[in-house]
Image 1 (cartoon, rainbow, N blue to C red):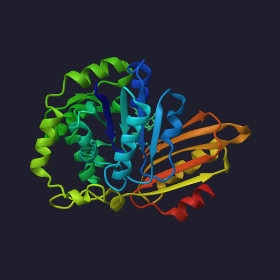
Image 2 (cartoon, rainbow, N blue to C red):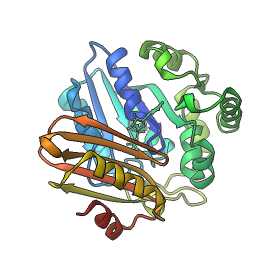
Image 3 (tube, rainbow, N blue to C red):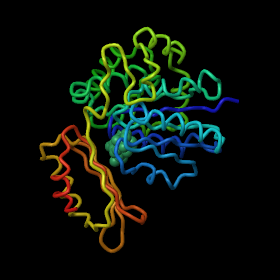
Length: 325
Ligand SMILES: Nc1nc2c(ncn2[C@@H]2O[C@H](COP(=O)(O)OP(=O)(O)OP(=O)(O)O)[C@@H](O)[C@H]2O)c(=O)[nH]1
């Protein structure tokens, strides 16, 4: 029987990892699961965050599995299939990956019948929809266009009118996908799974055919630095930059909060920050930063602290100064 593949796409900080956790806890019980975790930065954080779950994790960092490390992705997928023999493989591309390229990376495996696409989800932060669509249209539209299910996150912050406006706008890019606007908290993982499986109206084959009509692949470039398309496709590395560091530095919760607040005021267009750090009294903290939202949680001890900051104008020296590293 073909191994199921689920792709969890979505822009930086949209809620991909959070959704994967929900499915693991509420919907995928009893299945042998492998997770391919792709981080744009050199320092992986999500792989550590998912460690408490019973699954096989393959981390592919320092680039996007859709372009600069596409070869590593193919190899990683092969190895997971051969060595782990899972029932299901979850793929979390970096937030700046193009979904069409991730699907294309899986295509040879689909064609051989080794794997079949089960879920193809894009998570969209309802609060930042317009801003990201305006500033990063090439990446954002691609993630919307090729999803079979689009799930809005942070719906609690928007009124119904605003959500309906987003819904209407998304339909310009994707008329087929099932769009979930209900707050996740009130839906079970099983309910989301059922919607994602039943409601989308086109098959992957149809999507690939549609894609073929609009994208001409240069086979020599498929595993190279960037899949070449008619009208040149932009690579995430050309638009986004990242600062990642491992550190033994100890931060108080207050100090960390203060630094993250300062990120907001910096002229670096920081879009995402995440990390795991040692705090006072041998405690550990895990933090998430998206513009306008800082979350700091208690965490389990690790052997080293990690910070990853992604933006469009990242200044490493200034970040080192801020974090005092
Ligand atoms: N309030 C609220 N917070 C959310 C929601 N979804 C995600 N978050 C928070 O947003 C932060 C980022 O969520 P992640 O699930 O790590 O997002 P991601 O898409 O995996 O992010 P990347 O690591 O950039 O790929 C975390 O602090 C989450 O708890 C939501 O629907 N509502």
